[in-house]
Length: 426
Image (tube, rainbow, N blue to C red):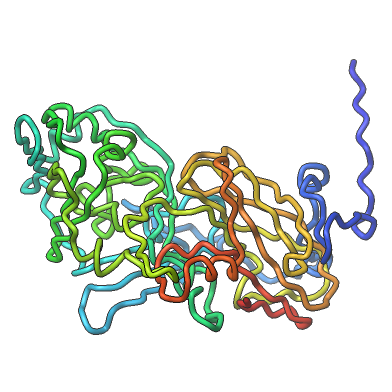
């Protein structure tokens, strides 16, 4: 018989800091189970009292055709930021600070609509492929559901996500209400290369113009090389058919690129020799730089991370050991490293990354932190496997100026006051 020797874990007060501000070695998660709730949050089971628990003695609810969240979790919902001037034009934010893991539930995936959510009858919907092709084709939904499909876990991030970071003063709202125009799901659909192969691509085609079937007739230009490389016609989200607000009956999936390109309610793909130069490629998604030049067609979403706990609006009950956790993602590939600072960036420690580490997908990071009750500033900094490092805000503003609105990926900081209240800071 093999005898196993387990090294005793020292008491929490003896765990050494590995960086300033009380950050602890991420490997403590693996060694001890780490009682992060702290002694203040633990209640003796024998002290619960004799209060009756009705659910132990009363039959529960009957079966339902489609499951719903617990009524006790009804506050975990998308936060709506509508454009009051135009009904149906606006956004809803994913409450990132209230979620765990890496997959966003379908009912909490962020939304961006330009003219409301169309209720499309799939029996009447068609996808047309035309333009610089050998033969124009039209596909109905039933036919597409019979095609070979693939599944991939991917984030989608609006190019305007976190744009409040360009403001001169930090916005004081929950993390998801500022940075929640990003979500991650398993998408299943037909590779677009299969459909374009059937249509036959002309030699002089270099762009694909995608158009939605909503009343806004959203259209965007995407390089043909990207479409043929890894784009898909999304039909399922997290195993179920798309919901109307996320593009039912079909949408475009463009891995790692800005959300406006993931055209929902897709009805047309036109192959062209040049981009269409639509409103969202000229008046929007184009930014003037300090040099006087403009950034245009800035497709890829850059390396980014966000601490979701602790974050704005949350309160630490007192000095103790806490878990710092959050999300990191990059349109350039996999997240290779996330560092966390508890002293405003003076020192950094590596966080533990939850596997699997997938390209262009959310990565959950965690690190234990011993808070001593004094003010602290928490930051996270992501690095992807292409070598891109999330910049400090001052660096990003110096590079891009103050005329920007899109592609904000600077390091996000939270202040923890001595009373435990957490707020956004620069």
